[in-house]
Image (cartoon, rainbow, N blue to C red; front, side, top):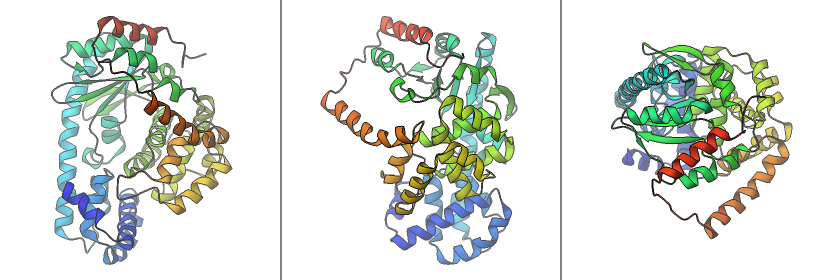
Length: 391
C-alpha cells in the first residue's frame, strides 16, 4: 500500500485532478447507473492505474468496482486490485460480525440498552454487498446507566481495556473507551462525541437515541441500531468532526438517504434540538453535490446557515474536499471547525489554535497507572453527569 500511495504522490497536478474526478464519479455511479455514461470519457483521459490506490485511500474500493460494472476500457489489473480490497473488506466484516454476535448476546442477556453504530450495520444494511464498504472497528453505543456494566461484560469476554490513564479520561469525561480482543477493536460509547470540551456546543441526547433504536439484520445477526434519522445525523456529524475528507463518509450519507429514506423534516427538527445542524448540513450538501445524494436543497439550507454555505463554497474552490493525500488542508480545518452556529464556527478556528498551543506549553502528565480507584471514579463521573440527559 505504501507503494500505491507513492504512486499518488508522484502524480502531476492535472493527473491528480482527473484521477479525483474519476474516483468521485465511479463512486457516484455505484448508486446511479446513469452516471456510468460519462465514465468511458473519463477513463480515456485519467491515469486509471492510480484509481485503485485512490479508492483504497478513501475506503471506497468496493463501491468503485461496482461503479465500473459493465464499463468498457477498464484494465483487468485495475479490476483485480479493487476486487482484492473488496474481498478483504468482506472477510473483515465477517470477523467483526462474529464479535458483534458474541458481544450482543452478552449485552442482551444482561438486560442492557445498546445499539451498534456505523461499521457492520452500514456495510450490511446500507450497501449492496458487505465488501463495498471498508471499515475496521466495532462501535457500540450503550445507555449511560449501563456503561459500566457493558465495559465489565466485554472485559469478561476477554477484551483488554486500552484506557490506562483513567484520571485523564475523567478530566475529559471521555465519551468512549477502547477495548481490544485478539481479533477486534471495540469503541464502547456512552456519548457519540469524545471530549466534554468538544461536546459543549452541542446538545445530543445519546440515551434517547438508544431508546429509539430499531432492529436490523447484519449478515444474519439481528442487532439494534439507531433509527434512520439518528443514523443519518451521526454519520454526517462524525464525518464533519473527522475533517470530512474521506469519500467513504459521503457515500455513507448517500446510502443512508437512498436505503433508509429518513424523514428529512424530522432530521431538521432533531438537528436544531441537538445544535448540530451546521456540521450535518455541511456534509449533506457535499454528499448531494459530489455523489448525487437525494437531499433537497431546502434541507441543506435549513441546517447550514448561508454564511457557512458560502464559506464552504469558497474554500472548496481553493482546495477540493477530496484529496489524494493525507496532509491537512484548509478545507479539512474548516470542516472540523464548523460548530452549532455561524459565529461559533468562525470563532472555533482561532480557538483551536489557542487550545493546541496550551497543550504544547502545558502537556498532560502521563499517568498510565491502570489505577482501579481512578477507573471507578471515571465511571462514577459518567454515571452522575447530567450531560445529554433527556429533558
